[in-house]
Image (cartoon, rainbow, N blue to C red; front, side):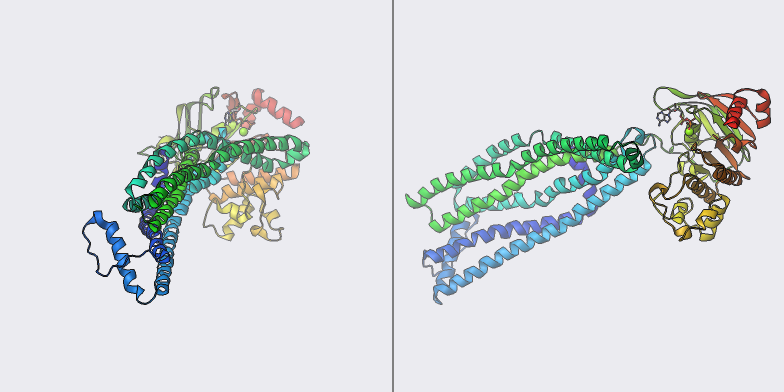
Amino acid sequence: MNYFKKILHFALPYKKYGILNIFFNILYAFFGTLAMVSLFPMLTVLFGQTKKVTIEPIWSGFSNTREYAEQYLNFFVTQKANQGAEDVLFFMVVLVISLFFLKNLFRYLAMYSITFLRNGVLKDLRNALYNKTLVLPISFYSEKRKGDTIARITSDVLEIQHSFLSILELVVREPLTIVFTILTMLAISPKLTLFVFVFIPISGFLISLIGKSLKRKSDKVQKEQGLFLSTLEETLGGLKIIKGFTAENIFYNKFAESTNRFYRFSNSLMNRQNLASPTSEFLGITVIGILLWYGGQMVLADKSLNAGLFITYMSLAYQILTPAKAISKASYSVKKGNAAAERVLEILETESNIQDASNATVKKDFTSEIDINNISFKYEDQWVLKDFSLQVPKGHTVALVGQSGSGKSTIANLITRFYDVNKGSINIDGEDIKNTTQNSLRKLLGLVTQDSILFNDTIKGNLLVAKEDASDEEIIDALKVANAWEFVETLANGIETNIGDSGNKLSGGQKQRLSIARAVLKNPPIMILDEATSALDTESERLVQSALENMMKNRTSIVIAHRLSTIQKADNIVVLSKGKIVEQGKHQELLENKGVYYNLVKMQSLA
Ligand SMILES: Nc1ncnc2c1ncn2[C@@H]1O[C@H](COP(=O)(O)OP(=O)(O)OP(=O)(O)O)[C@@H](O)[C@H]1O
Ligand SMILES: [Mg+2]
């Protein structure tokens, strides 16, 4: 119920459709009952049972409604009868048809209005989830499977719309239908209606028994959905490796196992749910049987009930079955929807652990220096950086080198505030980056990540990520700085060429140069470059290197370098080992020291 309330919160903007729905449903339930009741005069006319009433009856209070209605009807028929029974019959048929028409018209209008609410909630939930996906920190996703997040945004939200919100459609309609019908039944025969009252709690109890464990089952189904979407997502991303290592079977089996579990879980879920309608219908018809037996005796033996009235009563009783079935089904839906809602709300309610302080300032420019002050950091429980300090004055290029896993990329992650330091602080112009807004901090930074992250879009589209309103000239200039223009120029569609998923239509070096161009286009005061490790041939290495040099000109840069040739001109080369600085200085100084750096250079020149 709690989840339901929270989801319902998303319906608030669509309140007016909810109100319209209630309004039309009241009319629907009213005309629905009236339509059933209108069968009665037709039956009486058919059976020729109308008593002659020539004086118009007088309304004498609510308790006499039934007599009044019966009398009035007889009066009406008597008057009409002068024109012949067929006329009366025709009139009755028209009445029945019109009432049923109105009933169904209002039913449609009620469903029509609630549709906007249901789909509106679906849309807003998806937007909220997507927005949350953008807001949540990088660390949130290192544990999570991407497919699971995708499943929550797609199938879980759909499940909510499907099962959860479908009950909005019935929540007013069906109970109202039941209330109107029962009121009419009470008016016709209170004695018979007693049975119905006994039946409702008993069947409610039986149905709730069946509904147990539905949430657990549904949760399993939704989780499995996330798992197989993950497998699919990874397969698509790793097709080259899967094929190259002929691992198709391994992945197929993984997928088939998952779909198999999905098959079993959904069978058990659906069959549980499938019990709803048959059970409630059977319970209902049992009651109808009892009513027929008892009421039939009232008609046959003691003649305390008019036959036509009894038939009308029975059709009303039967009419209760449909809403009763719908309600029991809806109660299952809520249980099922609960599991999906829980998964959706889990994301929506996750607080980002990297948030702007309430008094965070907007930093407009970079004036003096980046000061990494005695920081320690761990991703999980092992310290990756320990008491690390480094100053980068404005205009300087600082290079980070060191063996794989020594914590170089981690430093980039911390300056960009993808993660927060555990101890110490990172200050820009003397101000802790925790005290500036993330947005303004990142506006100062240009980022070239270790693996070129490109989108399935045109070259232009990929660059516009850096500057939404850049002109084609600016884009071409940036491409030129990054040495990318020379290959873009030769493409049939130039900057309008689509580069495929993750840029896979391009070579490794071309991808790198594009991601450098993207950072150049942004033109930020501080550049953070995580050079790709992938070996490039000498020609593209030369191109990438001169692209980097072009880019670092007149900027403050932190360069994480694997090819030491890139950084010979750096103002400061920092050699890292296991999260600590072991050496630092200029290229020439470090060579003369004959320490770690000297050995690294020696190894690379040999290679
Ligand atoms: N998201 C993460 N979660 C947990 N541990 C991580 C994560 N990212 C990196 N690490 C660990 O932190 C350590 C430092 O990683 P980092 O990526 O900073 O190394 P690096 O110096 O950039 O290495 P390379 O030269 O190979 O790029 C490694 O031991 C790595 O296992
Ligand atoms: Mg790295």
